[in-house]
Image (tube, rainbow, N blue to C red; front, side, top):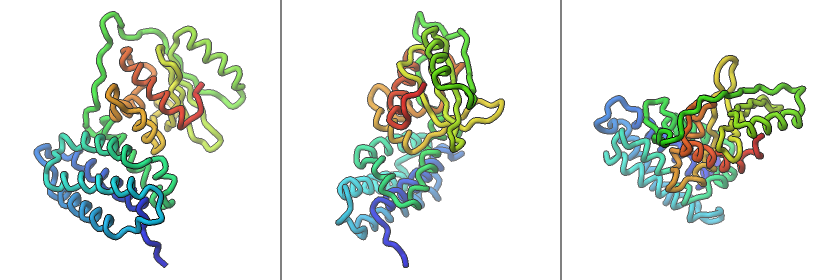
Length: 284
């Protein structure tokens, strides 16, 4: 017995497809125009959107208008790409703009909770591709933040990285971190929960609260941040004209303990930390 696709699952599937196509175009070797194969795939995806808008059962589903508008946006961007109106050099920015506009059409947190388990499994790969483009691992240049302002030299003071052990009490470690913040000493604390997931709490002078983020921790290697769907949604909500979505994701993924930071960068990182308080409890 087959299950009829729902508007929620269809939208997630098409978002994943469009993200993959834009990612491929953004990382293409030929920077003159989008590859023909990807243009054809984009036009085919736009046709799928039109079919879905006509065929999906819209009655009986929450927020049918938002889902309809979200699908329409996917189709419009795919059609633009398929007609050659989005070049490789603009594909990453088109993707960032698309996800920002999509967040205004439909509640993305609700979208993930309303999806079937099969559709929900697509979300990590979607945000992983976005994260790769932002972090520059594929050659895309992330938005530059200003160099330190006049009178604010690069930080040369000491830093501290801690790996907490299970026998250290929360009260003891909290007091130690309070002392570090009072002394203006940057720190990074990596903890592992009962499931084995590692989390880093990163604090730099000037931050109101530490940034808490999920990481992949390996021996003798810096912890590597992981961008989840929940982070993605929280940063979309926090984005505005002062710092767009791509700038916030770049700060989340690219900020390290020993990096030199201008006040502008610290302010951006603080905004990321505040935004993620809704994903994780307040960090240490």
